[in-house]
Length: 140
Image (cartoon, rainbow, N blue to C red):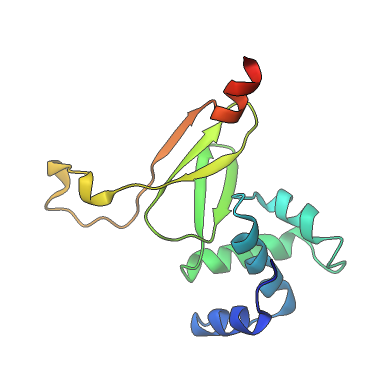
């Protein structure tokens, strides 16, 4: 599915981001693939289509997206930074076997942590690690 480039351009502009071709393609990748990519994954996927793309451009663009709050950083593993364009409150699960990171819908209305009642929450992170159902089925 191809997103309308004009919509991506407008969305980036509405967040004070100049919509260059590379930025639009990086944002489109985040939205379409939902694979919580690393910089390297994204670069390898987009470089054949955008020969002028560099890892530095991907890195700087993703940092800009995080700064402008249209993407979030996911740190399930200490040495592996991944990115997500879904900025809503949700968690993540990483499979130890296949390495896939998937979204978890969290009913925040069901989470009650009294110790946080008088606190201001600026960030939230909920990660689970284990073996996904596809990998478990493969072992049987």
